[in-house]
Image 1: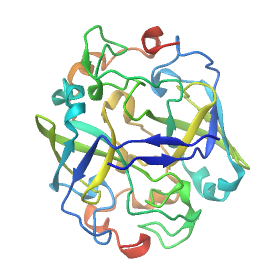
Image 2: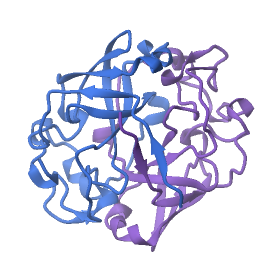
Image 3: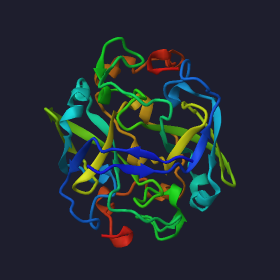
Length: 162
Length: 162
């Protein structure tokens, strides 16, 4: 099947320079600020976005190139199928984080709850809408035991490189 | 900035051959079945996924190539900034849908609530986990007025090609 080429639309800046000891999800990054530098040629597309409290970012896991189809994910010590995990090394290294939008100044977006590396290439921004994006009464397999886990326990370690 | 190349990991099969008259989101596609044909070389990565009731699909909007930075989105008649909408024509045409996982047989995944075109190239599968992915007390700008809209009103038309 034909390959697909994407071009970053901006860069995500965060406090995280190394893969270890990072929040593994936005929910573990309460209060952690970062910002998006959207390339100016896309700034017109930001109109009306300031009405949203949360935005979904799609980005490239740019430091994670190899992958295995079985991995020991964060928050577990057993090997799991890669697609049953959120591990960053994947056949197509696309990350997804729903972060809080604080403010927009020109083509800079100030955001909170960042859980990605500094200098991460941004691929897309989508508005978060509860009516579309929340799900209830779900089952979450091996992750279920972490349902009530405190965010403090959700940090990365060196297992996917660092 | 350097471009990034992805290779589809499978194909999503749905009842929708044309862009018009489709559900615009999974919540508008209750009961609509489809299936994923994961390429067999990735099947090992499906272990443990059957414990999840919902999965997030990232895929390529393969029929939507041009884009504008201002669009009249479905469910509105005013022009909005593209990044404040879920319109399929985007600088990087990556779609995101959280669908219900019904069953897995080998490298075939039976799914429900499909809102994408037939033959859509699949880029990634991530497990949905309420603790990570739901958000509460959000503000949703121009979309807010559709908070209680019935799924029957959420169908596409020809505005993004068809």
